[in-house]
Amino acid sequence: MKKILSYILITFFCFEVSAEKSYKFRLYLADKEGTEFSLDHPGEFLSQRAIDRRKRQNLKLDSTDLPISQQYLLAVSSTGVRIAAKSKWNNTIVIEVNDSGKIAQFAEMPFISKVKRVWIAPDSIPQRNANRKKDVTDKNSKRESYYGDAYRQIHVHNGDSFIMPDLKVKICILLLLMPDFIM
Image (tube, rainbow, N blue to C red; front, side, top):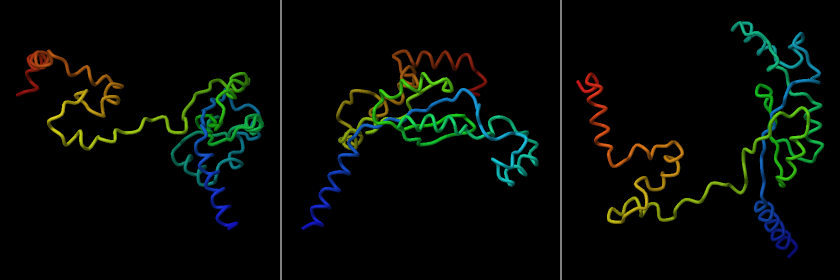
């Protein structure tokens, strides 16, 4: 009985946690001030293999090779957010928060130059049309869009501007202007 009750509680807890909204933000760091490493001693933050490869390829060390400052990482993590990822080459930190209101404090930190939301959970992508297979195979029904479910993606890239009532005229003009293309 205790096993069943604990199983039910664990299952309920897992579903409760997964329903909670979560956000990920990329924090762009302004500099690499305060890092405890120096370009004069690359062996402290790069492997010997990486150093040898850079010598073979004639690549000089620069500030992008330095790790992110531990002071910056501590300052960010002390606010109670979870650090999901970090990139020394892009000089960024990705954090995960459950309350997007916490982000305002990061914009005020002097070592952060920009804050950008990069992800929302539950997933912000809308669910697919449940009847999409029927729509594709049913040749007699009229769709609301020429492109079907792909309309949003095509519209983002202005692909819908290619299909116009006078498209044939434009194609003929284009072919007349480019005679070498058709021969």
